[in-house]
Amino acid sequence: MISTLIIVFREVLEAMLVIGIAMAASKEIHTNLRWIYGGVFGGLIVAAIVALFADMIATSMSGMGQEFFNATVLISASLLMAWTAVWMRKHGKEISDRIHHTCQEVTGSRAAKVMLSVVVGLAVAREGSEVVLFLHGVVATGESETAGIFAGALTGLLLGMLIAIGLYRSIIHIPVRHLFSVVTFLIALLAAGMASQGVAYLVMVDALPALGQTIWNTSNIIPEHGVLGQVLQALMGYDDRPSGMQVLTFVAVLSIIWLAIRIQGRASLNSANTAAAMMICMVVSMVPADAYAKKVYSPIVEEGELELEYFLDYSFDSDPAKDGSSRHQFEFEYGVTDRWLTGVYGDFRKRPGQGFAYQGLKWENIYQLFEQGEHWLDTGLYLEYIVPKSSLNKPDVIEFKLLLEKESGKVVNTANLVLKKELGVNATKNTSSGYAWRSKWRWMPEVEAALELYGSIGELGNTSPLTQQSHQAGPVLLGKLKGGIGYEIGYLFGLTSSSDEGMFKMILSYEF
Amino acid sequence: MNQKLKKERVTKIGWAALIGFVATTFPFMVTAAEYEIMIENHRFVPSQIEVTAGEKHRLIVHNNDASSEEFESYALNREKIIVGHSKAVIFLPLLEPGSYPFFGEFNEDTAQGRIVVK
Image (tube, rainbow over all chains, first blue to last red; front, side):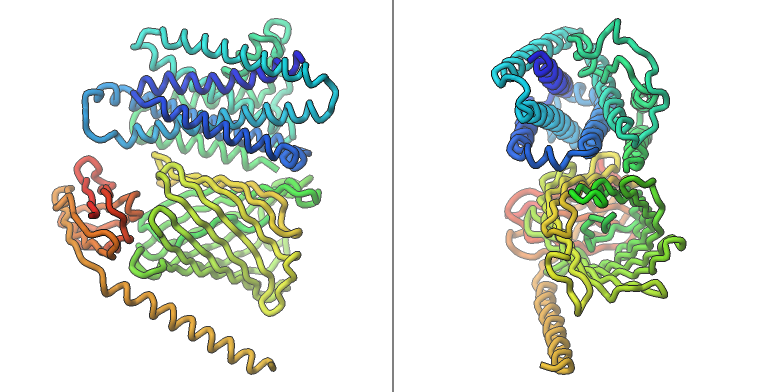
């Protein structure tokens, strides 16, 4: 009962802290609390969904999947919070000065509202899911009395809320002129703590070097599992025996945020975002990785667009040869004219039990055929040439895709019809075909929701039976944040026995 | 049926599909109504345009400034760069009644406008 109490207490405290700080922050930028409640509500729904699928999730996460999932959620949340802290510091004063203005809202402040909402939503979803999965695990083992478990959980919940409310009240009693800095500082601490906790998970599964197992041991001064230890853990990721990597990450995140705040101005915001994005790439790319780039291409080209992209596909499967394999791609692309986009990719894979391996280079081109909206379907042609690393003895591949897109009000449907041909001496297969589909709802620039489908049908004229084809489908969240950072994050479910049972996909992009 | 006839049939279907696709797309080009907007001193002139709902319209944006501008609108789902002293055509999607703001990304403070659909 005590362990349940402590764990629920900590999860609730973490969630309430994020909510409390977000509420204090939204007061500062004079935003409606509606956004915070929306985030809490959204997060609770996600946690409820997790509760429904608890069994399935628990088994698919067995092995090391759990740690990677936790790490990704923590580091993403950390990134969002870091951005919020820097943005708020920059714009907060502007906005409180304009309080008498009655004109349209500053677009920037809407971005902050969304950001706070999403951060809160993520925190509640994560904490809620962890509580659900933990309780599910405890009840499943049948070790302790169910009555004791629920008593512990309830007490933990009440205690967590009490302490969080106490902290919130003391925060809002700080004199106004200091409040903003204090809130920013708290958010920065939270971001650094989350990042170091995320990193701790990755060190646990050997995805990152520890750089020293125990830098200090304060378990006799402030034990991690005591009440104060849990409060500090929620607040800034306190660990009584941290590894070097955790300490390094904590210091690094705090420094990046502080630097970004010091060098005010557009350039600094971009560089903070870039630094944060690169940090995520660096951390995630060391995560242990096969599959086709899970991206649905639009035929629309933007002239002069210069963009860096990072793609991650991480597979989950009951087959141990496939479970935990991942594919990482780094791309640099440029819109040469308003019709032609060209880009170069570096492809890396990590199979379970093996290291990170370079696979080859890809050269991609997109040609937009008509003006957007000129005809009933926006159409483009995609041509890609793949040159694998010579020691792999794999064939060169040329891939052609027909890109089709149709906007209908707020919904955009995109289809990619794929033809792939192996060339040269090492070619073994005939031309094969596949498809990708996306239905996207354009809610706002920062947050769009989509359903994506991907499939490969096999060789033309000799199509494999359905069970041997790979078909995946799943939800994806995407958007473009102020400062040029774009993201896509989703989970694809395998629809046939040959498809990966689950695949986590993420695309991060930075536009110069 | 034998291989040769099968191949002929696929080819016929392919041509029919291509002609069908071209035939259905071209008529849309003809019925669009045109509206002109100038970019002068980093401002859109006129800054507000009224159009009718449910019809295909197009904007012709003339950039009279020396520097290029990017016509951008999330609501209209359009982004287009217009080089200095040139023009660009923007085909608008079918729009429901409402107000659709747009702005010039390179001069956001002054280049603002909207399309009001009635």
